[in-house]
Image 1 (cartoon, rainbow, N blue to C red):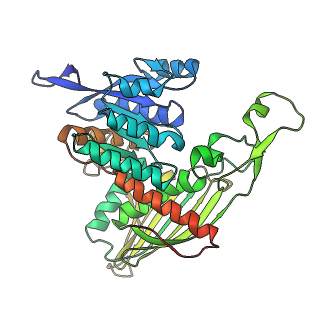
Image 2: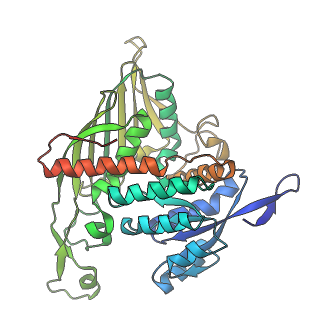
Image 3: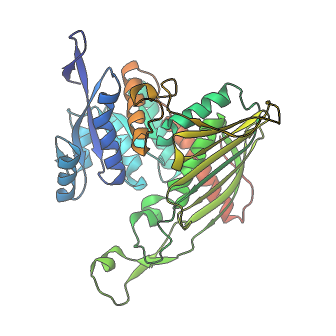
Length: 399
């Protein structure tokens, strides 16, 4: 780590050199967070955008200039090997997560890896072992479930942990998008099992499972599931680029379009999940509802500054769901932002994620969610696929 800015009393603030692998959608979101976090929060370390990697030299160079990275390379190993990089941020498709993360940890770097942690349970287990070994050397590893950093979600967890809902009875999570409704949408990497591991299940279901377990502070013990691929073939990307109006070459879709599953938490509470990328009209509709013996909570990502809360101990004449605007300085993360009532957005979740990771590095504490928590989610996803292959047979989730 180098020294750069000076703090209030003149002592130097150490740099934290960030190296990123991947520059597309998630790369842009993470870049925004690394640029913003030190201006929003007082930090013991100053994130510095040292190096970004991508296979296309022209594209990664353009991304570096646009996003403010000091250097661009076409081989991720250059990021891992660089003395100027202290933390490797992995924003690539799932098939490369394990290789990059393990190499980075063995090279002495901290690691942030986008969700889902890997494409398979064995890969995730190998990543956890590498993270445990690295932890003994003072390194940290975190998986990027950014929705844990929505202030309303953190506030919901505080209310649940504080007993405001009592014993939990039901958790419902739906995560619906519609970008694959058109059967002529091209066959991108997200539709390939080899690259993505799974479809809506890993892309959206990973978030749904993580939120259910995070809010309840309980693991899923077992699941019963159905999955479906509604469009089995799509145009190849190369065929889309020809501009030919004739029949296009097509390839097979090897992942699910949607998944529906139920589950049981360790305490016996019931959970249900629905995820889809073919739900017409739904853009990024992540909804969570938790019912307990004393009340209920509900959250909608498309209204992410709000939390709905029902206190069932109130008299029936006045009881009911009430809207809580989560923008007060006392709410999670809000001390860094705007006056009450001034809303935050999607990008702030990544800034909060960067803040929490930098604090964990500076204090030598284990960040959350850890690779171990990412592995737990991976085991649930694997159980969902196993159950679906067995016509929704109830399938325990390994501990």
